[in-house]
Image (tube, rainbow, N blue to C red):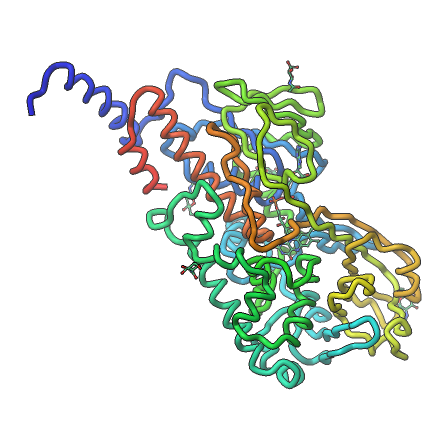
Amino acid sequence: MNFSPITISVLLTLLSPSLLLCSGESTVVVDKPPPTVCIIGSGIGGSSVAHFLRNYSVSTGLNQAQILMFERREIVGGRMRTVTVSGDTFEAGASILHPKNYHARDFVERFNLTVRLPTAIEESSAIGIWNGKKFVFKTFGCFGIKFPFVDKIISLVNDLYLFLRYGFSLLKMSNFIEITVGNFLKYYESLESRPIFDNVEGMLKWSGLYNLTKFTLQEKLSQLQLSPVLVNELVTVITRINYGQSVLISGLAGAVSLAGSGGGLWAVEGGNWQMAAKLINHSDVTLHLNEKIESISNLGNYYELNSSKGNSFKCYVTVVATPLDEVDIQFSPAISIPKRELQHTHTTFVRGLINPGYFGMKSVSDVPALVGTLEDPLIPFSCISILRKYNETDMTYKIFTRQPASDSLLDDLFSARTETLRIDWGAYPKYHAPEVFAPFLLDDHHLYYVNAFENGASTMETSAVAGENIARLIISRFMTKESSSSSDTRSCSSDLHAEL
Ligand SMILES: Cc1cc2nc3c(=O)[nH]c(=O)nc-3n(C[C@H](O)[C@H](O)[C@H](O)COP(=O)(O)OP(=O)(O)OC[C@H]3O[C@@H](n4cnc5c(N)ncnc54)[C@H](O)[C@@H]3O)c2cc1C
Ligand SMILES: *[C@@H]1O[C@H](CO)[C@@H](O)[C@H](O)[C@H]1NC(C)=O
Ligand SMILES: *[C@@H]1O[C@H](CO)[C@@H](O)[C@H](O)[C@H]1NC(C)=O
Ligand SMILES: *[C@@H]1O[C@H](CO)[C@@H](O)[C@H](O)[C@H]1NC(C)=O
Ligand SMILES: *[C@@H]1O[C@H](CO)[C@@H](O)[C@H](O)[C@H]1NC(C)=O
Ligand SMILES: *[C@@H]1O[C@H](CO)[C@@H](O)[C@H](O)[C@H]1NC(C)=O
Ligand SMILES: *[C@@H]1O[C@H](CO)[C@@H](O)[C@H](O)[C@H]1NC(C)=O
């Protein structure tokens, strides 16, 4: 090949910045102020983005980035929140973690938080399945269920009562759960072998979970030849507890919901929200509490974020870490995402005593500690569980309903109430199959959407997994953009992909 001076200079401009960039010893943008990354939402999703951005951007042009986080409420944590009922603290939103929620486990270890295991009442509780007239199924205190949420399908399999009713379908179900959890574990593979995903579909396909979003849980379980009795009873109880919906949710949301059943469920002592607090606190984030973002305008080289306090912020990168379905952030130019509705879960805490008469029972101790329900519009609640037993006539309960729990319903359900506390959560998406997904990238620049992943499933861990991917996506696209604005460094940016 004959190198003319012009080819050589082209080669040089092509190569030198990329060499500089790849050497990793200096930042790319020396003459510009460090870029600002703005994160909207202080839940586990937004705080994970901040954490992983800091962790992964050490030798990149983003290492000096300023991170601003906006939270419309006065506290961090979002759907991780505790309530206090007569002096005792309980989880009001996200409650339980799976033993294989590895990011959450890492956060707890990293920040010296304490793992909380089930308490005695949770440990020894009994489950009953209420059909509106009677308990179609009941286990007793010393068997199986470990948490107010359904735990330990494996041990349930050994439970004679369950086995008699549901038979070998229980084994098929636990096999289905195990395979799905196994697929999900791919998201913890090393950065070298795990791609960066710029869309949810690709991310789910890569781990083998995408097909599960194409069918309802009911279809999926019937393909696996589970008995309809199991699906209409125990499985329905679980999806109603975890997602406030029926077995018509997608197979993936359903499997995630059932996965809270391998045993070893846990929570963070003092409240799961502390994971977000610690992540934020250790990521050099400037936190703006009580500041709601009202508009996001793309002004060419940056985004202008206007807040409820009348402030304007210039952001090079903007990350939306909240579901957009019920917040009115004005985007300019407008963005287009598929319409999605949130399932509202009304969470009611009652200190008092359940009314056994409601269930046709004589004694309070006849009512199971966890009452799950079948899918029937006439049944006015999804579940009731005992959170804490002070003595035989004084307990704290948690009730999930799809509508606000009226006083008359609570008066029917309880013979005594000394304290009642209600929370209305825009809890999680209403799941459909086949599921459609919003993009992670809301435009061609640097506007990202963590909660696009929630159409797959909504949990603390899935938000962390989505947040980690978004952090990598930001870094890789930032490197590509920064370098391509001065020259083309494709080969280098793909190396960076591999490094992240
Ligand atoms: C009742 C209930 C029970 C659940 N149980 C479990 C469980 O047992 N285990 C589990 O893993 N998951 C559970 N989940 C799901 C889990 O809570 C969520 O998937 C997860 O917490 C979502 O985190 P996130 O950071 O993506 O969103 P969020 O936690 O919703 O965070 C978004 C944040 O953005 C803020 N925000 C919104 N708009 C603006 C704005 N314009 N400007 C500034 N700030 C804004 C919000 O105030 C919020 O703090 C449960 C959820 C509910 C509601
Ligand atoms: C990133 O996380 C890894 C794994 O936990 C840790 O070893 C490393 O020190 C972290 N790096 C930074 C810069 O925080
Ligand atoms: C971790 O917390 C425990 C108590 O919760 C405390 O005794 C210990 O000193 C802490 N360790 C660190 C490294 O902060
Ligand atoms: C998903 O479905 C497609 C088409 O039905 C099929 O080709 C593919 O093998 C399936 N993938 C998995 C992981 O089951
Ligand atoms: C955040 O960190 C600082 C010190 O680094 C500490 O004083 C403060 O209590 C921490 N806040 C939370 C909520 O952990
Ligand atoms: C945001 O605030 C700036 C400064 O006050 C203003 O010029 C701009 O019009 C506002 N943008 C929107 C979309 O309201
Ligand atoms: C149960 O506790 C309540 C107060 O918490 C008390 O008023 C009541 O007398 C106790 N009942 C019994 C049977 O101990």
